[in-house]
Length: 92
Image (tube, rainbow, N blue to C red):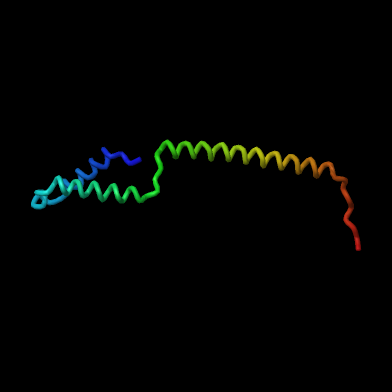
């Protein structure tokens, strides 16, 4: 979610950058800046910090499970290789 206070502050700062001769409609200009910023930001595919942290934790758990499964498969493959009788290469 977009922090509207920060968006307002950014709009205020932008309106302060306008030359003094154009500041007559400062309030309207500030509202326009705010609308443009909000519109632009809403089109971005952003997530909140909380959503990001949740997905990060899920990814970490998934990675840990994958590593455990890889170790298990390697151990099973080693056991299978050790259990197979060694056959000499066949000549034709």
